[in-house]
Image 1 (tube, rainbow, N blue to C red):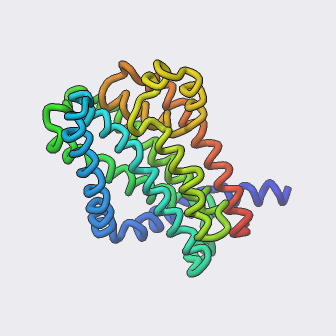
Image 2: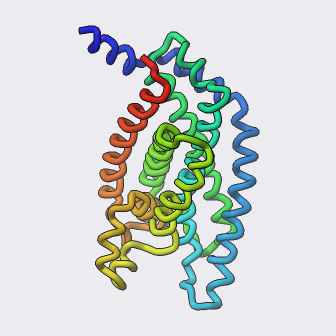
Image 3: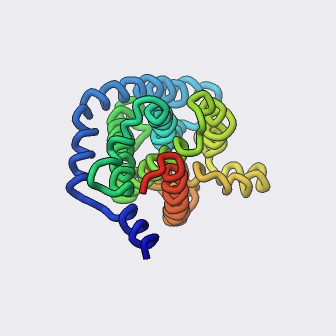
Length: 269
């Protein structure tokens, strides 16, 4: 009975505390977004210029810039994940701000959900801020009328929610800040590069079918394919609905693992 009550208290949700926590974390959102977007825009601008214009002289398709932009949108949250995980681990090892939040009259679930929503909001806003920039740079290569806006909005929110939750999982499993570099080199970077950033799953299947099937084990391939299906059209991409279903399942698994690892590390009750 006591165990059941403890589980209920940890998993309960206090909306008033959640709103106050989220409001506190979003207090400097304008400055945060501005700084993050400047950094992101430099990378995106250089990538779109090279892929959308310069490399066409070497035989790339005329619409490759728009194709590449789909890969960029899929990667925004992934890069945010790494940066947010670093900040979270630093806090765990030093100031432990989250420990203070866990002393508030709210469940651990409420506090962790506040972090997830904050990370997801930043990632989602930055993703949509890139669309006008891409349109200006690519112009005729990128047609806004081809975008399925309901699908794109839903999917961008979905993947940034997943990335935000994965941030807590990474922070929970990494024992020290210096180990995050190993995690980037050995796991995150390969998942990104082999996750369809510069190629489609269909093109891989046409060249090396066996490798294409192996790539289906990479969650990032579903992120990239789903973004492109909503951004450029379903043709030539993995089914958007299938991508959503797979990522929702992964999100559920990641959420459970993140909660368990942080519960063990922070010992909240």
